[in-house]
Amino acid sequence: MAQLSISSDITGTVWKVLVKAGDKVDEDDALLILESMKMEIPVTAPEAATVLEVLVTEGQAVSEGEVVVILDA
Amino acid sequence: MDQKFNVTELETRRQKALGMGGPERLARRRAQNVLNARERLDVLLDPGSFHESGLLTTSYRPEAKEKTPADGKVTGFGTVDGRPVAVVSNDFTVLGASSSVVNGKKIKHVRQVANDSGMPLVLLGESAGARMPDRMGAAGRAILGQDPTEYLRDRRTPWVSALLGSCYGSSTWYACLSDYVVMRKGATMAVASSRVTELAIKQTVDPEELGGWKLHTGTTGLVDAAVDTDEEAIELVKRFLGYMPSHNKEAPPRVEVPEGSDETILDILDIVPESRSQVYDVREVIRRVLDKDTLFEMKSRFGKSLVTALGRIDGKTVGVIANNPKFKGGSIDIDACAKATSFLVLCDSFNIPIILLADQPGFLIGIDGEKRGAPGRIMNWMNAISQVTVPKIAITLRKNYGQAYLNMGGGRNSDEAAAWPSADYGFMDPGTAVNVLYGVRYEDDPARFKQLVEEIAQDNAPWDLASLYELKDVIHPLETRSYLKSVLAVHSRSPSGGVGQHRLSGWPTSY
Image (tube, rainbow over all chains, first blue to last red):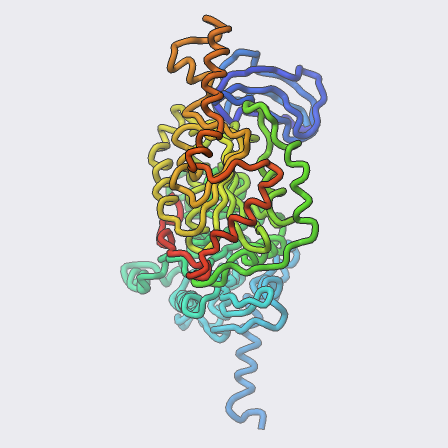
């Protein structure tokens, strides 16, 4: 088991949070959707994992490289 | 009789040279599952095709003569899939394949012959840097820079580098001059080793962090691909060469079209979402447009919001530049600009027609990009695309906003432009445009906001551009492959045999 920090690859706003702590996710599952450049940009799980913590809430501004979710893989 | 003409001595010297750095060092490599310099050539070249140049070379220094078989760099010529190549394979078991006077002459020779006879140069890299004490002191300087074209990259023939171990000095420089670079995971490439770095600037750094595959495929973009083994790396070198002409005075080779190539496009409408704000992976579109299984992506971990890939249509090599909404919504950042420019240089240098597939919401704006000189990178790309003389075909899939419309082949920046009916040409997203032009936000007056957005969106549809003959056609997505086949045949550049003017062949190698 290893902790995985998932960061945003773009500066924007959190539009929808799709998971909560304890949820199981598969590789490529969307964890949340950011809104930036008028696009809906999913942040996805790089591998199957359990969500440990969601660090952002809907409407919150995030910067490129900011950690938004922590997974346990 | 055996002694006549000293043939016995010849044999003895040959055997010593083929023994490389000695059985112990070779055994250590084998134990680590790493191939040696000559085994790598066996994997690369067609069996029996290697013509070695300089087997009997050694260091010119008396004290090093005995321990420098082939002077640490195995050089020569051979064939890959029946086509000639020149090769340099660094032998790390001989003084770390360090750069010396004699092995410098060897590289110079094969490079020269590659240019003169029109064959690619393949460099299998693993080198410690400059050989000491040869290059120490002021006298050491006197052996440097004796060849003013040593690091000249004029792209007369393709160069390919595989980084297969610790790469400092020669292997690093040649990789950065190459058209395609692959790295074995665990190999490193840097200006100086972590040991030198620690001594010189007191920065303790792990070699992997200083110059490992993640850094170079993801952050610097200096390496195109990373794989697990020497064999896989060399396999990619061969695949890349399969798309390339042997030199810039011929078109790339044409191969047979795989069966089933016209069928893969049938589900293309399922790939691309209709809502312009939703994302998809454009590589799934590219795969369906190209001949089956011919997609060969370059720099897939770098500047991911833009895809650059070689492939084939109707058996002939094409280069594809496509925005990828899957990453950053397809917005074009600095890395994507550098990636597009370097790919234009490759295609222009080697007579490869370019296909631009646009679906982008604009350049990625914001302080990070501006700090890194975004406007300069954008103009670098424009300067490059203006000089390209190979055919350029531009297709707009969905959105194609702002100034980036020109970078993606808009206007006279392509030879032929078409669009899907879903194309959306505006200067910015209709919602943003309503804010900027009318000062109306959704919250202020939802009904009026919606009405204005609809009006602007209607103006952005492709029909006006098609009626003004800016777009030569609007095509059904299912017709994309047949359209490209047909239009590439039309733009055959028959009088020159498909050979362009290579105005970008002297372009800098990274920027």
